[in-house]
Image (cartoon, rainbow, N blue to C red; front, side):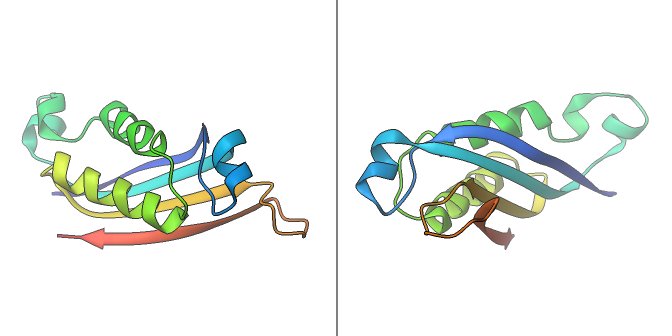
Length: 120
């Protein structure tokens, strides 16, 4: 059976951006994940984590990828999505959204970001 697992509004400090200052000082980012997961009876009937994907493990994967400094959020989002598909065979599709708070664009915006979708 398919089940959607979501993690919304994961706040992380990281050093991503095209400008050198962004990579030195860093900024606050908000990451959201939606994953379509193949869940089996171990999770539904037996209440066993082995039948699904642990959201704590998904969060750890996101944290690892966010800690790698990059110029582009597109690159970070792709790394996160690819890592999730590689690490968790039960994930069939994943959507990764990354917002950068207070982006240095000379405009007022609560966040600017990217969203990427990958599937098997």
